[in-house]
Image (tube, rainbow, N blue to C red):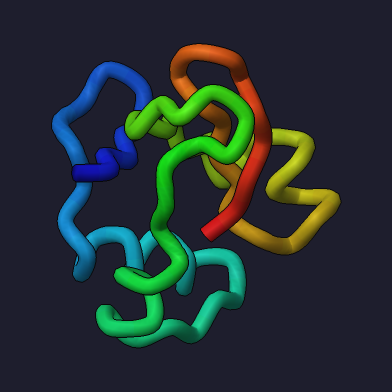
Length: 77
């Protein structure tokens, strides 16, 4: 099971991920979010760290970005 975490916190539920994505303009349903969440395409890791809203990539890209816990491969919600 793929896990997406905030730094030093527990894995987020689908409803929490939908809420986090909506903080920077994302409008996904839980079903859409479930389809988007996949293991890291580079190393296969199944744990992602969600970047804070005030981070540079989130501010510049307008999306809720995350990176792979093992190889730091970037992705977004």
